[in-house]
Length: 300
Image (cartoon, rainbow, N blue to C red; front, side):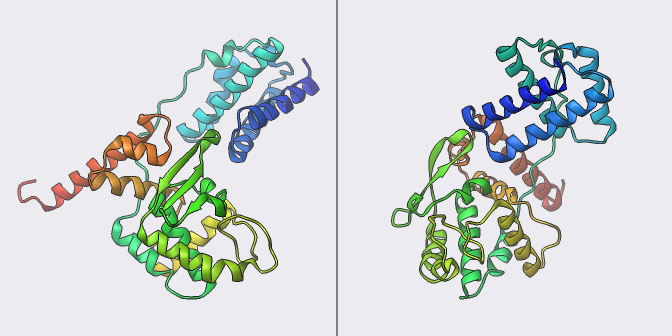
């Protein structure tokens, strides 16, 4: 199997995860980049055949990743990308996949997700004050993200028909193209009504599409566009640092659990397939309680 054959396998694999596995465009891009980096490593080692890679080469590659100072999470994803390629290659072309099948993932770092305290969120909401189309759009976007805990990628795929503002329910297309329905409250409902009546028609200009949220040119807003909007809110609110859109999602889950929501309900609202993905938020609330206790109890 020469270099051109490796490229053919990669092309077929990318088509497979995009069309048959329904991976998101971001995941497809990350997996493709991970595999191309691995191919580059093989070229440097003089290996031009995927079938010739054995466990020592796989271990050497992981060592090189650690040498670059990459996080354990990133290294684990790269291992998953290559292991998935080999699993595909084994099923489709009979390639030996033992090297990466035997390789262990690095232990996950115990980093708790960053989230906003309720007071900080109020500052963000206040930064959207205004009756101009941009402010109304920004407020509706922030309210819906916080009210539902949806991912930014899910937000950008919402169509007008997915919103039932009379019932306060939104249809969301999650990971793996799994649909779920998520409720939202009166604040998001009011903000959406104002946006749809007073803002979106003006921003749309000559555009004609069904995406719920649009940029200032009337085009469907992108993930990077949402990040830009949220970072501008941070600047106006004078909150230090940069915001990651997932911080709103983390805040949604943390605040629900802190106020007594059961973890199974939060799991369903977030669209998590496994409860373990949701349980990280219980660690946040416990850590917050511990800090408050240590700070305020007379004999802590």
